[in-house]
Length: 134
Ligand code: THU
Image (tube, rainbow, N blue to C red; front, side, top):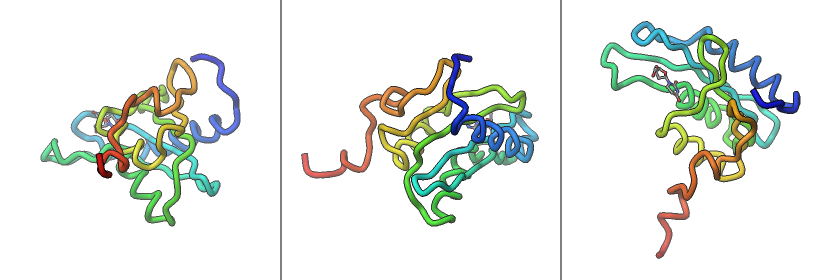
């Protein structure tokens, strides 16, 4: 991976790798752990939770966003997710939309190619402002 600053990424990677171990992924056997910093300094995590009705699966990012709000809300500032082999992965399309809502274009995402703002991960995103008057 491209060299990235230790702070805050080493801590987030540790948290994502740890929570990936708790994923419930008996169908795909693909564990995902996600970790993010909140603008008040909190760290929130999530893991994927699959279902026998496959389409009901919750991505790790869903749990993370739920933890964000359950813990008091706020804005995501830094995000990373990893697979069960500890490799950094990119959020799926749906989760890019989910993360964009709660971090906006300046949310920093750790990609294998380096730290990337959400404005590049999901360019020209549909968001709360899109619902306003023309
Ligand atoms: N998965 C996530 O948790 N987040 C993503 O961004 C990509 C996919 C999960 C869903 C499913 O449990 C497994 O990875 C395989 O697709």
